[in-house]
Each structure stands twice: as C-alpha cells, then as structure tokens.
Image 1: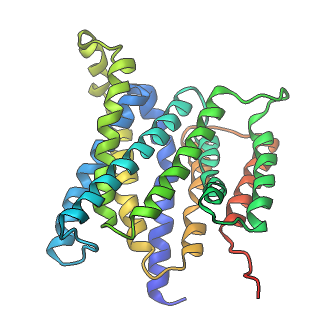
Image 2: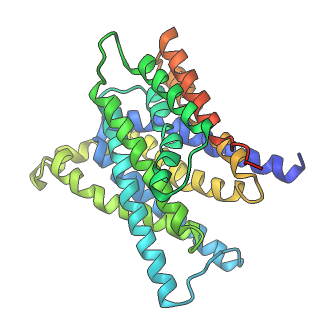
Length: 308
C-alpha cells in the first residue's frame, strides 16, 4: 500500500472514530438539553463549519461539479432538501432512541444495520443482492436477538427506534448515491445540514420547549453548562463537519469496498467509547450479538464474485 492510500485510510479511520465516539456526545447532550434541541443545534453547527470549507475549496479550485446553470443549481437544491429530510428523520429517531435509554454501543451497532438495508432496498430499484447480503441478513437477525431481547421476544421502544433510524439512513444513502455524481458533495452536505436543523426546530419547539415561548427561560438553562456545549460542538463541528470532509478526502482513489470496511469501524468505536467514557457494560450474550452484526456488516461490503 503506497503512502497516499495509507494517508487516506487514516482519514477514513479518523472519520469513523469521530462518528463512533459521537454517540457518547449525543447521549450526554440529548439528556442535558433535549433530543430535538441537541439535533437541531448540532445540524446548524455542521452546516456552518462547511461554509468556510466550501469557500476555501472554491478559492483554490478544488470544488467539483460547480453549478454553472440554473438546472445545476436546481438539482443541488432539490438534492440537498431531500438528503436533509432523510437525515432529519434518521438522526432524530436515533437521538430519541438514545434519549429513551439505549446505550451508545447498542445504538452504534443497530444504526450500522443500514449497510445491510441499503442493498435490500436496492432490490426495488432492480439491483440484485448477492448471497453475501442474505447471509448477512441472517447473521444480523441472530445478532439482534442476542443484543436486544432479554428473555421475552419483544423489542424495547428504543431498539425499534434505532432500527427505524437505520432504515432512514439507508434511504439517505440511496438519495446521496443518486445526487452525488451530479453535484458538489460538500455543498450538498452543507444544504442537508441546514435543512435538517430547520425542520428539527419544529419538534424542538413542540416537545423540548413544550410548544410555548413562555418556557424559553427553562429551556435555555441547559445552555449555561459546558456539559451541554461540549457535546454539541463535538457532534456539530467534528461529527457533522470534520468527519464528513475526512470521508470526502479519504475516499479519493480508494476502493469503495475498502473505504466502507474502514468506515464500518464506527460501530466498534461506539461500543468502546460507551465503555470507556460512560462506563457502559455488555454481557457475553450482547457482545456475541455485536460480533454477529459486525461480521454481517463486513460481509455486506464484500462483492460477490461475478458470474463468468
């Protein structure tokens, strides 16, 4: 492996580390200021940090797919709005699952199931799944049973929300897959973060602020503490802004399968950070479940051999 690929692999691994550890920030921040408030502000911060990135790339001539016509700009805006709506659904459902008590580690692994959901949804777009995908589905189901079921055959509300979040993130990936070849990826991301933040302001007002500006003083008290702002800045600037940029740079010249495998380390970092920082623990059964799901995630990234 040459030095450039080593450097790009490091960028991808660093992005996965930031995303994985961000589950801890989400867990702490959501508890302090409310799940929708946290998601609204982190999304706005993510959009803000990408503005200077876009400006710098434009100045040094590294921006790709610069919109030159009205049709190009229209495609960029539509793509940004659709990506933002999918991101809004996925991230808010995920944040609510954490707020209702799911551990950072479990959230990381259940969210990572989107890697399996994407090719399954692809069937409806006439994209066939290889045998590795179906084996991965079986392994995931087994892993979910070990991870989520405590004797009784029923999901907890938080578990169901995290699985729903994986579905919405799968839709998000398919929308990005459609629009990213047509537009500048960083501009698309910037728009989606602002859309996500603006739309999330609605449930923030309805639930976190109890649909009344009379509660503004009580709601604002959370922002007098560093324990609220540190997770917000971490999740906003690092998770949304920096990690996405690292992914864009890191994937240049990299095999997509290798890149996906490195990024799937996010779920491992989520468990490790929850254990080290939050003191979360998992029993043998839960760890085996995580192992099965992680195996399925890796298996889903390995392309099946093409027929002769």
